[in-house]
Image 1 (cartoon, rainbow, N blue to C red):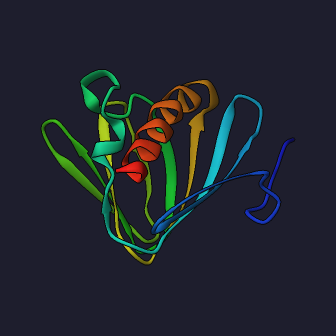
Image 2: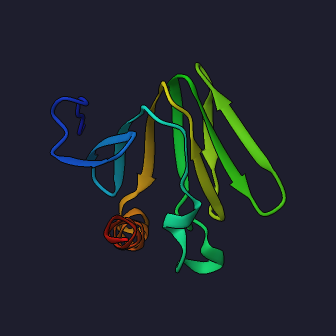
Length: 125
């Protein structure tokens, strides 16, 4: 059975107010994420269908809260709650939050290609 800890995860992504440590566990990627600043992440998803994340996520908020915005609603998940975020969302991060999130690896990689490209372009302006 594959397993990993936050400290042993081999891929790290950082941005102002964000740190994610990731590991593929055989078709699904676990992400240990920490948010130290409030941020609306919607601009990073521009270029994906409907300019929204098309990757589903399952997770648990360990502390703080996380909000997913959909075309017709918003869902806020708070510490101690598990969640499923279907495709078609944009995340809003809240400072002081830690989550553990699971996503299908192939779909997550396609999404992150766009997110990273948008983040790099924003950093250059």
